[in-house]
Image (cartoon, rainbow, N blue to C red):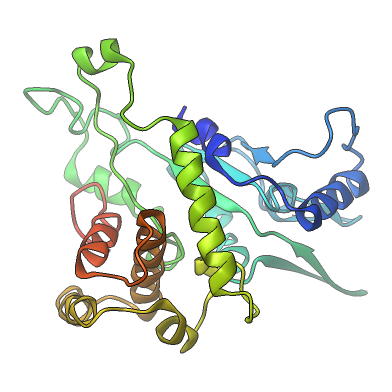
Length: 282
């Protein structure tokens, strides 16, 4: 439900994005034009093959990751997907394109999508599910084998990890959120304007696209935030990719708050979004 609500807080499509989506869907023979161009939301089943996900075949066709271009790719029960299928996501998540090699040439298909994955904390789905006790029937080795289907290399390419606990009955009956989709979208649009202004003289559009030394040059880190980053980089044995992800998420959190600088508390919040099911920062 949360994944399907995500499009409601995203910015409107730009004209360039609309054209790109229309071209992909028209070439794939699935663009009717009746509803205009909307932001894609693709939700493939966990039995999907590599070719159906990334594209290819005898006659080159767009896969789900290209059909999700400029939109959302939602993988429900992501750990039920075959590991070799999940691993092919590494290139498009990093490069925003997928390269398909054939004897007669190489094809480059766009695949700039927002990946959302959801999974249970164990095969039986009951780990940490009881209010007063853990009702999980899985062994520790079963849990580890299950969670290891998501490799460290793929985790490094994911920005946010968040455990969603089982709701209590009184929380369900309230049915009121302190932050509505409308209010959240306002904050997203303001943050988008901040980023547009920040990158108007660069090759970038979003915080997530910034690379290398440009991260330090463009992100305006406070001295306190740099100290926190140094401590946790050494303490947690973070990879460089994971380190960069934390800074990018911190910059986005600061933008949502309208803060010019990344403060130490923005770093702490971003670190909180790098925790696995067992509460470990990865």
